[in-house]
Image (tube, rainbow, N blue to C red; front, side):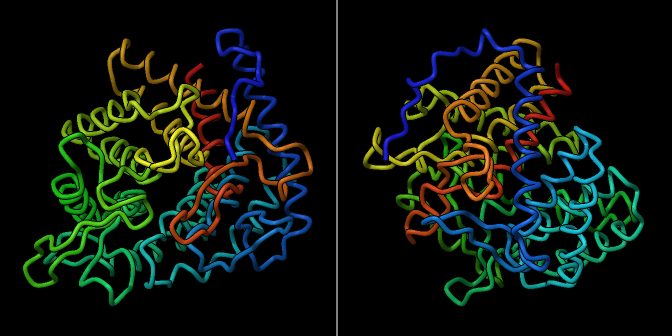
Length: 381
């Protein structure tokens, strides 16, 4: 399917952005209240595919995105019904605080319990987050200087670019409980990722394999992209967002400069479509007919909006304008109709093209970063 953006006659310059944000949030509230009514209490939404609402258990890496989105919607609206649903969907993940078999506890716990704690001060959320941080820290390998990503015999010790997104939980726990070791883990992981994961053009590989004794990089792959040397778009988005957040937590200028370099790679790439919603891989062989990935666009928009707060006025305006263009396109050409799309907000994301898994469907993390971007834009207006 080729996604056309010519059907909309609206322009970003004509947009009242406060009204725009209000409209998107109102729609999201309606969709997510409807989703709650059909979602079993012990499960989390995954996607809507072939006319069916697909769910997953709480141990799935994306389980924190739906409750996290609900907390954002509560933050914007003050709607108590949304708050109650957010709590119900968050507390369902409680047992995952002990899960030492995944690097994705940041996605799972910090998006859910973290946003909940920030908005309610619930001390139970705090304790769950601190236990979860301890579980995540157990995956750190001192010889490699990184947190292990997947438990798999296919590699000695693999580290994927996505893992930059899970450091926020450890940064928070380091401050909250005065555990400097967690901060040191985050810095070590970030430094090694910056040194080893990126090509000269500031694109990144997806996965690095490391010798567990020497720490040496022994392999570089792009498992979810078109080829090992291609730029898988969501991987670029994860790295961009992750290093921007690492700068926020450390104020180390090298991370800021790295984030700006990734931004330039993305914004100047000859295969970035005019509407700013990336193809699933910047080097997909069937461009311009390649599938788009709304999730990558939403993640990039959110990172651009945060990065805009750390740079010069000229750079900031450029980043905000690009983020607005992404959000405008998502709202006008990728948003579902009310009550459709499994009650997800956005359509046309790509999960794992090479496995023919979740291709051209809604994804829970696309919605999360779309909502987060709307709140970040509201705060900048």
